[in-house]
Length: 572
Image (cartoon, one colour):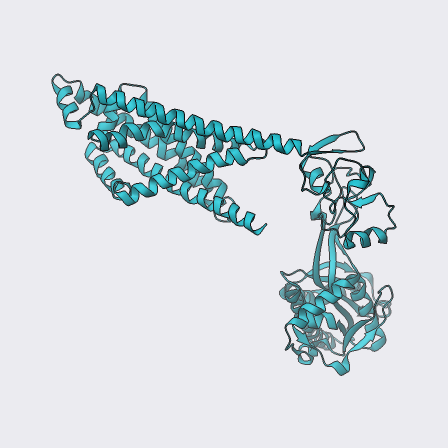
């Protein structure tokens, strides 16, 4: 697999580098022709500059290497394709890429080769005059235009994933239209000028001699070489097409059929999972975990061909056992058919909502539950608007500490909240949760000092901070499916927060959070808590005042312990 990926990356890089070089050459060629709008002397000066890059052996070697590489990869792309289905932009780019050599052959033979073999003056006015009164002039302009359009499409496909390209795109489109337009104007201007000089009495023979045009015998030889090169190109292209259909025939002989419960039959090749087969062929197939084997929503019943499937892996067997599945039930994301099957999807994708992995994203994050202690008794003597006023002031004081640490408030629950710390790694998430919890303690003390100055009683809180693997997904109806999270880590954090009331502390932080953050808690202070709805006891650190949290923790000396703690929690 690594070899295949490396080879694919090398091919892509070779195509990009050779394509950029050829596009730069086409740009210089267009600008050289556009210089005819100014004068013949300026056109000559631009051509001399262009020759500094491509008029010497190293530059010519680079140019012809880029041309050969790009043409070879175009043929390889035809031969190695699995299907001729492609987007209009891809089809246009491929067709133009194959047309380039067909036209470029003629240009190289009647300019570069004629110059080296017969001494033809290949200055731009000479080449323009040589082709002016024939269709060749338009064929060569169209050649450059084809190269230009092909290169611009390739450049856009290459850079479209970058952030800055979308901002430059309107200007680049304008440039892409302007350059060939100026070149056409320069071609017409210089062509009319040199032709008007050529047709003056007595000038034709002098100009032919000065440009050293080939005689009829030389032209006949050039056409023989062109015919040979043309048919060689046709033979290579035909060979690429033949290889494509030969590979397709071989694959079809090794193919198998998947028949769905609605009668749809799909012919596919070996190697794909059944879920991938459904997705690639437009068959709706539910899979909330994205095909990772973490759920059973993609499960199917095998109605024919079960005996041809390999036995379930240990992970798939555990999952199927958990739901007490029958023997003919399998996970579509885990089986790779090697023979024809007839299947029935257990869950059908219905409604306007598309079921895909974006609705169930699995992450290992820190989760924080916070609640105000004794708020029911406190609010008994307050008017409803006063209650709202107090809660808003409280949240205004503490929520910024969550957001500044990188967390978000997932939901408010009356006098409490649930906060998530979605970071790039479990370590960063745990560190952010610890920072937020400690800063909430500081903000609470500051808020209580303000309440004391107003003659109000202080607010007391309880927080539970835990880390673990959760699934963030859309739950609800088609028209109203807000994002929420599900997982044992959520329940454990909630139960830890409830325990703070019994212990009379502001915070209970699980040891898994501490270790995931790369820190260690005082072992003598850690306690094991049996929490309702949680299978295993959770070891946690009681913190009387959350503002002192970071003072209780110290860096973990063994970096592997962090990975072990997170992995252990995920297994739970």
